[in-house]
Length: 213
Image (cartoon, rainbow, N blue to C red; front, side, top):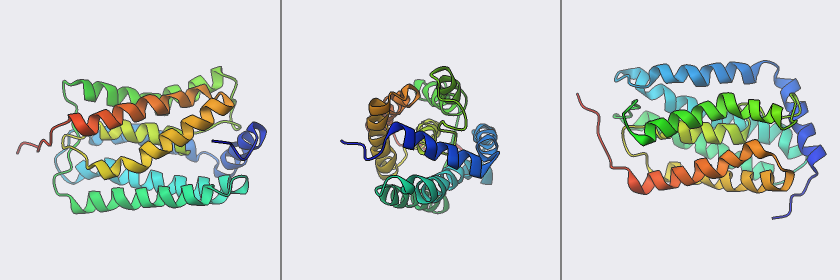
């Protein structure tokens, strides 16, 4: 797929975006790690992770795609709509499903989920810095790619089998983002492909468990 913009234009979008939103990426990163406190809870707070994902995708769609990325890529408007639809999907799932339950288990899915979360929030910007993508001209948490990796990580912590339709847009974005990563050698985004493959495998391999009372 041909990229309709240059690497310089792409990085400049991140510069404008990061400068405009100030400390928001740091705040989102702190909240993203703080969400882990809710994992294992069986009361109302058990729904907080999925509602945070709803907010994160709405932010990505409206702010990043709608206000900034659309200035260099007409397709960003479509991407923005996709992200907002994903946000609505998470919200509907969170509001309509009584037994949403995230849990730290002695299973590979939990370990991989935590690794993806830490990759998205901590290792992603660190690798970006080492690869020469210096802030503010670099993707920050709240932008599509790290947010997608974080999403896969959180969903892997779900005790119940997450509906396959909630994975469709994140997996599509993983493919789109990985294509851009290959074109522009943004190596930290290679984690998109890995996390996307893990997510697809999890859809077909996990059983639909229910939380114990």
